Structure formats: structure tokens, C-alpha cells
Image 1: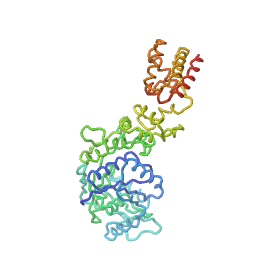
Image 2 (image 1 turned 90 degrees about the vertical axis):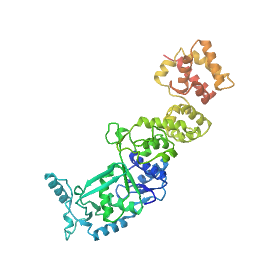
Image 3 (image 1 turned 180 degrees about the vertical axis):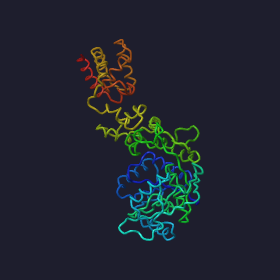
Image 4 (image 1 turned 135 degrees about the horizontal axis):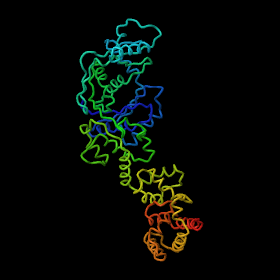
Length: 468
């Protein structure tokens, strides 16, 4: 097969998990590196659990990451007739058969096998059954070869051998006419002309079953590449308790797609010692041979560090556009104007997510700041009230409210009071922001502007005068 064609095939039974997003990224990068086609298949054959809202979230999440697909999405729910036709081919050749065993019979088989210390699996009894009792639901089972071995030549795991005797006659069509995963994957990968199947190694045990179905239908299997999953810091299966969330939640929390993409690629893949990549660099360097066989470990601190790096590399104007909704989410009356751009410029060094701009910068948009109790008790006192009063008088008479003139004013206050910069600046910082942490004091003053600064200083002075 000359053309490289890969697919990502999520089930819309829930939101796209961060591990699934990583599989999509690996497929997309491989296709872009090889100048192939990246396809999307929605495996929506479960009518009860599949929901349109999950499909929409999957499409939105992939688009947010910048993973574009080259053909219209492929929906399994519209192809039930096709799966039935392939199953009938197998039935005609006695490579599949109807099974009408009840749940009780299946459980009895399982218990008997366990008592004999055998692998519990279906014993194939319906293959020999001439007639099926009426009133029972019927499924179609694939007749799995029981002799010999099935070999998987995996591009990541290497050669993996499975004993056919360990595999039973799996169901390929359920009683409601819907296909099971292993059967539909074979049919769809064939008809989509998939050349490489790149997926998590939790699917490795499915692969010999799929290869057997390919062989029974006289179809050529794709190349398989099973990458390790992501583990939590405790080396357990990654879950919400490790802080891992659905992909779309990271967007809502204020992570940049470039950071999430970079972070997920680097879990299990490397290119020398480089940590931060542009998308073009990832496309240029990505290959399967540098995907490790061992599982990567989830590191939320590294993701936050990466996100901070990408934030500092993003143009101020774009950051303002991206951060604006987070101010609105908190009820702040922010607008896309020079004031917001100035705020973003001052906070960019200190923010590690887009949401933090609103968390750290909410004080820019309130009429009255809320004082931190400890900061208020220590810094808005009868001792600092005269300092604030002196500063207010000087600032009211200031004609140029800019950094250079403000520095001069503070030096005058320091000279007249005999206080060091910290003793002057910290009460001012509390007066303007409510706390003791903020951008540089002169940047803070110039962004807030003369009217806001004087109003907040006067209020703080009143609080200081009434300090008990």
C-alpha cells in the first residue's frame, strides 16, 4: 500500500480523554510527516451510550489541538448493512456461525473451564448445532482457528506471538445487528484503505483476533503500532485522581493547544534533549522508531511549565483575545482595548494559564478592591496613613502619570519620610490590589491610571486611619 493513511477512531460515549487525544496526535503527526492522509472515524454503534454532544466535543477538541482531517468523518452507525454483508460472506464459507446460547449456558461453560483450570472461553458448541431453539436471540460468532500461532509484527513492540488455542470464537455481530469492535475495525480499516493502525497497547490483545478476521476474508492487514499508555505518578492507570481530565477541560482551564500538544507528544517520544517544539518541528522530526516501549508518566507540573512558556511566547494582542473570555467568566467588565492589553503585558510573566490572567488581574476591573486580612492588618495602619496621604497629594498634582515621573515622586516621598522603597511600595500595593503580590509598582500605577490610583489610595488611607 503506497499511500500512508491513518485513522483516529473514538467512541462518542463520553468526552475525549487526554490519553485518546495523545493517540490522535501520534496518528496525525505520522501522517503529516509522511505526507499521508489522516482520517477520523466515529465508532457510534452503541445507540444507548453514543451521544451527539460527545461527538461534537471530540470534533471540537481535535480542531482546538489543530488536528485537521483530510476526508469527511466516517460514521459506523450508517454502515450496519455493510458489516452484515461481510458477516454473511463468512457464514457462507463456514468461517462464522449463528450462536443462540443463553447467558446461563455461557456462565456454565465458564465455571466448568475454571474448575478444570482452563482458560474460560466459548466452547464452539453452536458451530455444530443444526437448529436453534425458537425465541432465543442469535448472534454471529467468528470461527477462530485453534491450531498454530498468530504473529503480530508490531512497529513499536516488535514481534508478538499469540497461541491460537488461547483465542475463542468471538461474537462479531450482536443480536441487535450491531457489530463488535474487532469485526467493525477490520471492515472499516479495509474500506478506508488504512495503511497503519497506531493505537494504545491496551489494544494489542485485540490484534491477533483482527488478523485472523483479515485472513478469513482474504484481506491484507495494515501495519500495526501499539504505543504504551500514560501512567499516573503512582505508576497506576491514569485517571482523574491523578489530575487527568477530558481534553476539552484543559481548554476551559486556560491551557494553550500548543502546550498540550507538545506535552502529550513528549510522553513516550523524544528527539534528542529538546523539550519545546513548534508544530512544524514536530511534523519534521516525528517518527515511530523513537516511541518508547515503556509507559510514560503523567506530570501536571511539566504541563503547567510548558504552558507558561507558550504564554510568554504568544503575542500580547493574541493573549488579550484569548484571555478576555476568562475575565467575562468571572464577571469582570473587560473589553478588548488598550487597558486590557496593558494588563496582559504586565501579567504575562506571572501567569501560567489563560485563566490566571483573570484570577491575578481581577483587581483591575473592580470599583473597590477586597483587602487580604493579613495584608490589611500589617500594612494599612496608623503608621502608613501619613505616607499614603503624602503620596496622594503629590500624585494629585502630577501632570505626567508615567513611569519616570512616578519614580521621581516615590523618591521624594522616601526622602521626606526617611522610609525605604519597600515601606512605601507595599502599603500602596495593598491599596491598589488588595494584596502584597502584583506586577512592578510603577507598571501597576501606570496601567491603573491616575484617577483609579488616587481613588484607591484615598480609600486605603481612610482604612489606615481607622485601624485599631
